Length: 249
Image (tube, rainbow, N blue to C red; front, side, top):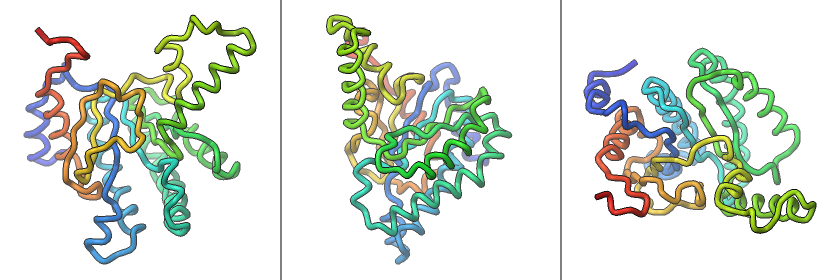
């Protein structure tokens, strides 16, 4: 349901210039919790509510693709109890939200490397997400155990195996060949990357795919990022001229 503020913001959007793919680095859960003298997992749980808000507004605006950075390959360096809590929170979120995602015609995919993930965890994720795969609305992509450099490394390894087997010749390699070996091969590159909490870096997020994405940085911590902030990011995006290396003239 839209509030008057959100409705007023969305009325400023040009429906013909909405991005096909919005990707978000959800940052600031830990700082949000620390400001409230609570453990980091308290912030992650609050962040899950922000996910629900953003998924709702993306669906209401009929955006085709929304990608969320949930757990990176570098996050394994965090305390064990925080990692365990994040895994449990993901399963809890999927179990709680799958029926609602189906009702809203959302396709849910978890994207990342299976390395270090237990087979039983992967099976539970697969069983939960596949219930949505026949939907035709918003494609919600959750990046879990994901790293942009690892993704490219895996793609290069696959291409090397194809060359070794004779299925691919070296002179056939181009950017399209590489893109089709990435985890995100079935989706368009992001038009807009949003990062919360004010940090000015990509943090190994879609480093190939985001080459020409517009980047919107907000100081708002992720648990406080809701529908209004999302629409403001879209308005910022629509206020820019995308030149893709050209002059724009």
